[in-house]
Image (cartoon, rainbow, N blue to C red):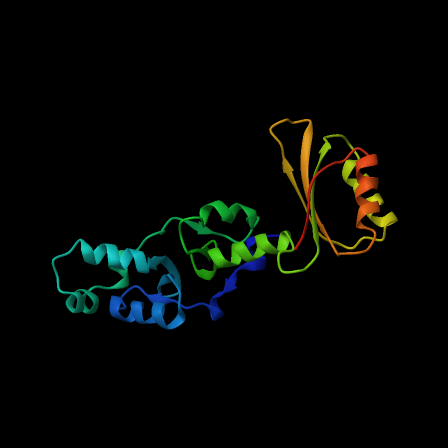
Length: 210
């Protein structure tokens, strides 16, 4: 999945212009219950203003709060001017980038603002990959790293008419072993399904109904 598939498009975004006062910016942040907002120069991306950035700037000044908020503009506290996306990146690449910031802007080749990807968007996709919001049985197991193992897993699931909600694999430290986490719908044949997995060389680590 690409960034452009999960981004919030421009027409749905809360934005501010770079000459807006920080008082107006804070009102938009509070009114929309968000921690950061894209800043535009016309229709071009200029940066991001975060709640943390405003507070940090204020605490480093000797100006009264009201004067600071009314006489300072978004341009004065811009961050993330160079941290942008273009929409063609895979969404997984945004997870680490969004660890400590609320959003990343998506811009076109001319620097025009197209939308944003928020930390919440990335986490939602991550949860979707694991089927977090659907009830089922989560099975964690390992498999030797050989050709055809995922196909074999799919074949066993098909034999038992299992409905796979999610399937995620992870590299292990041992490059000959791969860890797999699969979530399936709860059925009465779970014990037989697990036994078939083990008989087929999959080492079951954990079974948890969620």
